Length: 491
Ligand SMILES: Cc1cc2nc3c(=O)[nH]c(=O)nc-3n(C[C@H](O)[C@H](O)[C@H](O)COP(=O)(O)OP(=O)(O)OC[C@H]3O[C@@H](n4cnc5c(N)ncnc54)[C@H](O)[C@@H]3O)c2cc1C
Image (cartoon, rainbow, N blue to C red; front, side):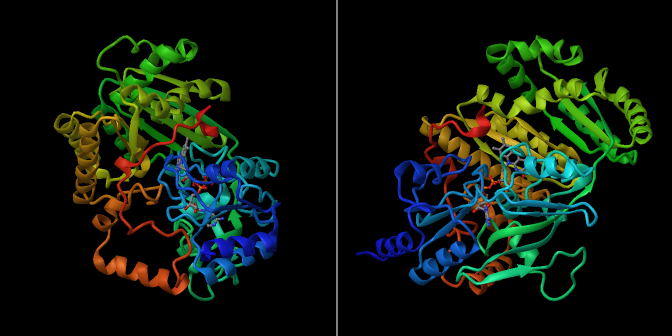
């Protein structure tokens, strides 16, 4: 019997078939995330409690079996793909949640989704403001492990800003708690922050204490349409210069808006009929416009005042805009942003989905470079993003059935990442590294920096059992076969 088979056998004996599955369907479901690159694990484990997690890890460490934790599998980078097989620890069912409205804290198990967390907070007049596009699915555990951001990062920051303490297990199974159920904690090394964004490579999160904030009373949204991508970016800069604090400042370039029009015309004419006139009237024009979506929240008078000031700035750069103070109209304004990711497939059947971050004075340089990149490689690069964070989702669209296009995509992403680093930026602002950004990890970090990370990994996970094959192990994402499967967020 091989070591893996022996360990599988022991685990099945210990936890039983209720927690441990070797069914092909269960293993396939646990074999990938939204990158849709599948590597089958040997077992899919749904642990009943912390004791079970400890038993799994103790056994895995003893037999050197890779263990990859899993939330909803919505990561876009392959972070949740069990690259070296082994066992997947699925926390999707861990849903315990308690809100303390006085301390303004949530005590959450890792499988609680961000939408569930925010809905529970809302019952106490509070909110958990981290708002990725995947909030209906993405879990507390997964968002902590990727340090997820989202559309309201402009004002509220990212996951790390809300994690007060973490508890969980080391690879050998020992239970640890980093921090406490307290607002402040200044007693020892801050390992909590090492776990945040570590993509499950340093420890397994089984519980988190998260900071909540008062829920804003009202919000207002403005959709502004610009004749060019450059005008939209300049306007976003002026908005920030004015001292305004929008809760969202989303940017969509002309190519992104154009592909969304095409998508609606082909697949969703009903939405095209419903969106505000100021955008719809551009649907037949060429080139398509760029768009900013700007949102303010707070009390009524602050929001009214902010909106008035905003419109003075917007009117200098854009002739067309619409505003909304009720949620139903705001939903229509947000449609272009909510549809654009799916709509990009109008430009090619496959995408490399990047989330680079730029210093503010380099944002225009990046967009100029993307124009050059499209001309040089022949591949479209629709881009949208969180302008107030300088965080841009640039997509390289290609056909992976065509070897020449695969090579062009490889070249395009390498050129893009080199340019981003040259401009003083970062290769990821919120999605993390996983497999998709691993080829560029050494562009971002020096040998000395990677050496420190490897030393930390060795100290916490000496046998490299937690999510191996990531970060500094370079992959070739442009060559990965993509599973044709419908995932929950595709609907
Ligand atoms: C439609 C869509 C929109 C998105 N929008 C955004 C966005 O706006 N901003 C953004 O940041 N991301 C976004 N994402 C990406 C994704 O939702 C985030 O990366 C999210 O944090 C992943 O959460 P998850 O629960 O799905 O984690 P998974 O994908 O299951 O796992 C992600 C990583 O976390 C690790 N992990 C999971 N649970 C644990 C645990 N208990 N302990 C230790 N490690 C663990 C996994 O091993 C893996 O490395 C989007 C994805 C989709 C599909």
